[in-house]
Image 1 (cartoon, rainbow, N blue to C red):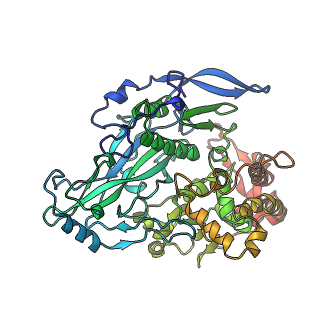
Image 2: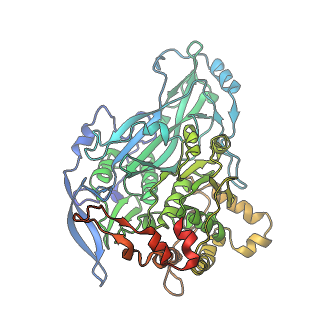
Image 3: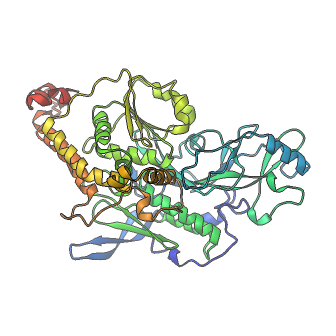
Amino acid sequence: PAQSSPDISLCSASPDRSLCSTSSTLFNADDTSSVATHTPASSAASSIEGSDGGGPVRVRRTFSIGQSQDGHTTRLVDYLLVTCPRIDAGVDPSGPAAPPSAAAAMRRAASVTPHSSPAPGRKTDAPEVAAPQPLCPCITAVYPPTPRPDLALPPGIEHMFLHPTGPITVRAAYALPKFHSFVCTDGSGRRLYGAVLTVWEPALVLLPGEEEYLRRVSPSQGQKEDAADDDYGYLPLTVTIMSTWPYLSMFRLYLAQLYRYSTMGGALPIERLVANFCGEVPAAPPGSYEVRAHILDSTLRFWTPPARQPLAWVSLPFGRPFALLNPENMLRVWHALVCERQVLLVSSQLSSLTTCAEILTSLLFPLTWSHAYIPLVPHFLTPMLSAPVPFLFGIHRSSYPNALLDLSHECIVVDLDEDRVKFGPKTPPLPPLPTRRRRKVANCLATHGNKIYWGARGGQTEWDHGGAAPRAAFAARLAALDDAFDMSATPDRLDFGGEDTDAADGQSSWDALQESFLRFFVAVLKDYRRYLVFPSAAKKHAGGFRATRFVAGQEAGWAPFLTE
């Protein structure tokens, strides 16, 4: 945290600051006095920990918050926004309410469908009540209150990615907070990452005349005398962090702890915590420095790898895709991305889509994915799946049946829940990888990928001979991946595989997997510089690459792959 800020981990309780209460949101968009008081200056001194080879040292460096660098901003967080469903403006919320019996009758007449099939051993999700008229998300608060001069908030962001599975619905019972993430790309190709915490707050269903509308109420207000118990439902409120940095795991932890802080109260107002984290905490500079921030009993660690290495290598739970896909399927998907094919990820867990997409594209390093990239496609944008260009998209399982009508016949569908890779009827065959290099990658996946894959399932022996029990346990853990607070598994098992630093050779599984894919590209592209054509004013050409000569100069068996 910034030196000018108090240690958030030492906060005491104050019960009147509730994040989920409508009477006290994070801050009022129309009254920014409390935010302006804590708006940081253009530069902030930050306490950073680094290493000089002889152990950790504490240094004090000054960063200029907000300057752009390699597509990123030097600040850690660009925006934090709060949304809630928009109440019908044509109805006066303070008007007279219909008799409780009429409201209850309409609630009972509304269609109620399960949100998802309950996993074995887990509590059934709360049912959802379809509203007669669609509810639209509305941004009720945003920090900073004025747009960033170097990065504008994408227009309509609340309609696209905050509720990507369908229209907003009213839950009949309370549900635990959920988390998901997304990525949106601007016209210059810069990616903006979103981390979304969804919580449900009480709502009262009323019937003025013949129209139903929803009145949000604070839990502290209690039930009204003229409302029956079954007149209450729950509306989704979202808190979203927007950043050019893909620290989705740490953002998830911060939002969960911020929600905890709001329910238990604290000596500091929530506005101060938000202003500190969004305006005073800088992004970690590349290299051996680490930025730490504290909230309640949690420490957030942010580190940027050197030499332009992918941030996903240090900012995301690397075990997620390797736990969901067996080594052979993992190699197929990576092969398809290297050959720039159309790939669609499908999962019942929204958080798995962005995480797996980021990890998969990071394995292309030193190459980058420069085609269409939407790890979480909203339900109303499924026609994009028919685009005749290479893409890497992700979609929720509930939207997949409707998406089949728009799905390209060349698309490769990757089912993350079922560990299945399906090629389209017109998918061009993939050119064979160089044999020796493929064998080395496959051997590494068999050693380290299998360790993560079977570790997430309790072991191969248990999976093969344990009957239905290990499959039920795995399904329960899979269904809990979107939960903001894990209630069933230990934290080190939540992300389906962790960093096993106790490996015999001192190298973790993730380091070994990164190295195997990187070595493949080093071996295949090692002498590419010999075929570069540099710009020349005398010869009046802008430079380029002699691709035909490059392919001809490699081993004969590599030609089909290199040509594609």
